[in-house]
Length: 447
Ligand code: PEP
Ligand code: MN
Image (cartoon, rainbow, N blue to C red; front, side, top):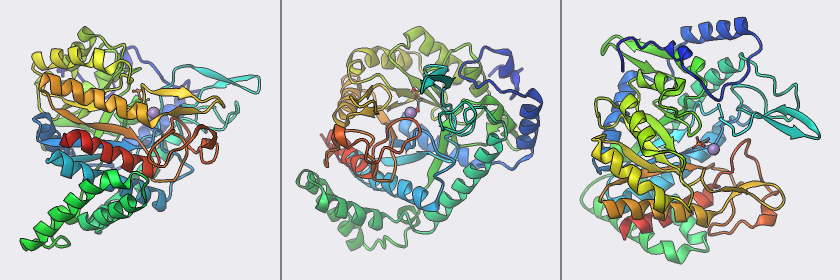
């Protein structure tokens, strides 16, 4: 971070993927109001996440980052949050057992409202309208009027994020995240899954481990580490006015923290090493993720690492590879080697979703479960070959029974996509597909 950094100086850098706001005065008024609001998270919590990620950087923890592609203003109930948390916890139990290390759980939650898009506009019933950029900008309904950017929505995003943070806290601190309970949910899943036989041995081993702990006198319901977990919050830091307004100087450390979420990431479309997003992130103390797509070259990647991690601080930087199943085995290795040789102690994550999206015949944006698994396998292969640690996975999922991605143990077929295609942006794994994925990743980790 250069000395002159301030939370708003990204305005002097080229910026991509921003909405066209219509009123500068209204935008400024909203930013001022946001800057007076209370933080959503606290520096002490962010530091604690960073310590967890530092362990992952050293191969002593595994990261599970998961949640919606885009959270919706219209689907914001405690039940939805509970279902999402439940599936993340269930996955975490399987991953903890199979990785043999602690799992750092980060939700794409409590602020994941802004979306980068590959084109500016789309055509609907013959009318060209602005493309959907997330509920923090406008409504998703495909009309000119609904797609008009409204700065007031940033205040709604803040309010809903705040409500989500407190719901998550109430659940995780109230025993919802109890280890033995999550395990028994998994037993129900295994018992009813067509792949049950395949998963049974892992489930039985976890069962034995729990019995062993109980036999040693550990009361699972009383041990705080087993009874309460932490789900950290994260979102893409895309609307920099929102992020800057929630960035505060921590009096204790004299460092700036973006207090809109614990972790923030920069998307594959905004990772220009000389651009506004990298500039903004370079000055905040939060752990920062950077999406690394197949077009990322070694020199750009090293520039990004230099900007964001000049101190080579473990836990600071997460690189989220989203290559696509066809490119991961060819492209990832050189990038991992270059970053390692440059001395940045990053956590490498695999996002197996964004490089494997295609349109179904009926026009649904979808992903195939086996493509997703193949990219994860490729990611593990590359790290095994190099002797580096596959630090975690980054997944788009929901706790609901949607039909957005194809395949899985209870196979979702192409003609079924229309049944419950509910996403407002990218296709998510449903709860059962997410658990399938956790057991399949467990097989890769145990091997
Ligand atoms: C996302 O994570 O939803 C996303 C848009 O990813 P990427 O920037 O990797 O395309
Ligand atoms: Mn997405």
